Image (cartoon, rainbow, N blue to C red; front, top):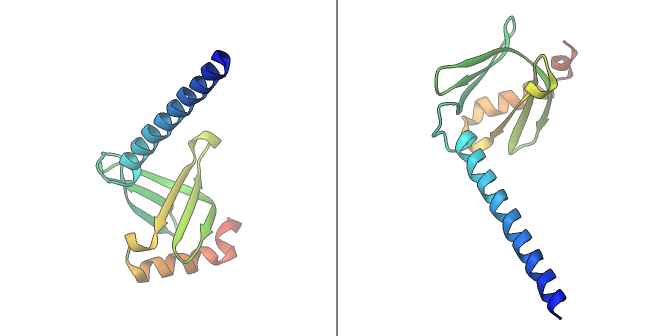
Length: 120
């Protein structure tokens, strides 16, 4: 009986630890990317025919000449996956429909659905 109680107690502590780690991870990434409270919050995504894609952050830094590797387009959100020189340097941007202008969001969705964009 004591062994059963100890094993249940170990499972409980393990579950609590995993829950705390997930909660801390959620708060960290929400601060970094959702709540726009950090210096590295993404504020603008631009595309130019000659320069490619660029990401602008709230600390005035930019990432330029990014290649769009893939995208996921739904009526509610758009996910852009940009690749850089090394695979661990990729950037993933999620744009939700209520966070941007309705017409610009529609234009982005239409543009990403064309197959020519990924043939570069």
